[in-house]
Length: 107
Image 1 (cartoon, one colour):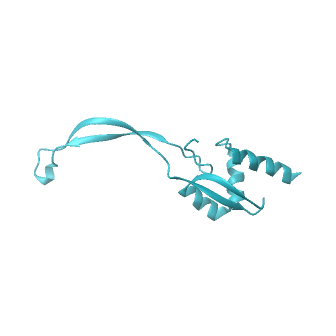
Image 2 (tube, rainbow, N blue to C red):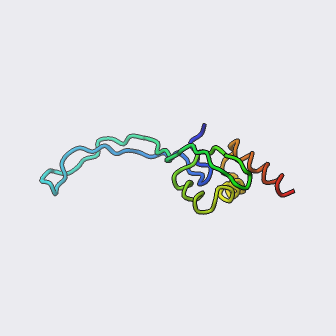
Image 3 (cartoon, rainbow, N blue to C red):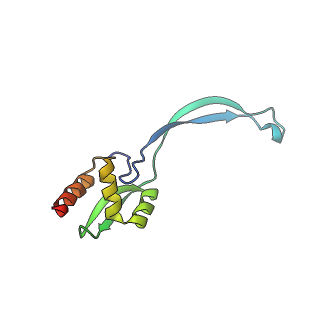
């Protein structure tokens, strides 16, 4: 399962950690020195949640960040997931189900 939020589309990003040694000048030392730059990944704050979608009258299991949960609370699950499916951020199973359900409901 990929580390992607179904609502916001945020994913793991690459960054680095800077290792330093020495004491800061304002504390009486000779200054801080960079000793190495280590690559790392910053992963999003993802949670798997079962969300009730009242328009479909069923639960949908989604992987969502905490910011995505706030979006769902503000706009509602169906509106947030519908907007996500329009943008085609991810091709998860639940997104495909909702797209299919939306076209069936529109007919």
